[in-house]
Length: 143
Image (cartoon, rainbow, N blue to C red; front, side, top):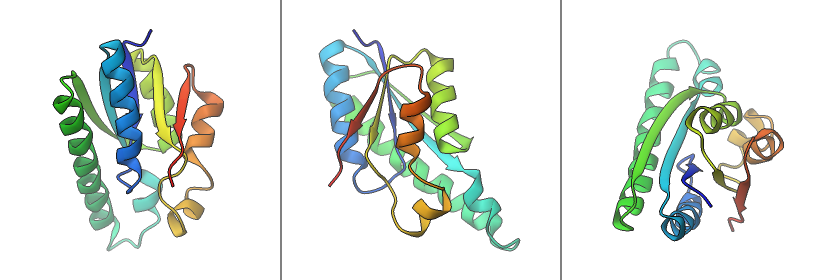
């Protein structure tokens, strides 16, 4: 039923629960796991001029750690995995990636970051993806 499963990660603590669901579905379907992290350009563009590059670099490092986690877990399950990082607006980049790569299912958590980050990104990335995705979206409830 599913050949390519996109697991969108933001590096937050609840992400591994989402990854576990994606890996389980991928294992049941012998599917490829696509780990995907978006460097939110709004975050570093909003920073002071002196801090922009530091913020961007920090987001990229955070993204690499998150993608490494997805890769390790998928490989431990014996699955093929693709890990990608792109710069953009998270919900738009996730939907565009799904369309471009022919993904059959998107797996995301109910929420990632909280507090200031959530306010600064103007709402739920997951909500916007579910409204515009061309494929089914599995939303994993994160405690």
